[in-house]
Image (cartoon, rainbow, N blue to C red; front, top):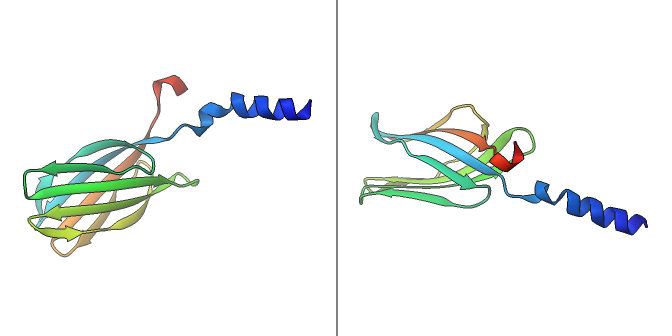
Length: 117
């Protein structure tokens, strides 16, 4: 009987195994000039990519952490120059990194699904 209850409790809590989704609001600057401000919604641990013309591309992966933060790995290419910053960010707080003349600012927010409300 204990085994049956254990399996039932795993089945009942199966919804908690669904992948988290995140919205990442970004600003990319080159020499202080705004290049792009993409907003991306993606699932945890999956890469998303934005490309605008031949001069701008932006890829990122969000890995949630237990403490209301997330690890964010990015690759940003502007005018042939690429930076690959990795950051640990607090959810819903702006984080900024500057490498050379390129600046990346992001705000990562957890997306609450309509079924979870």
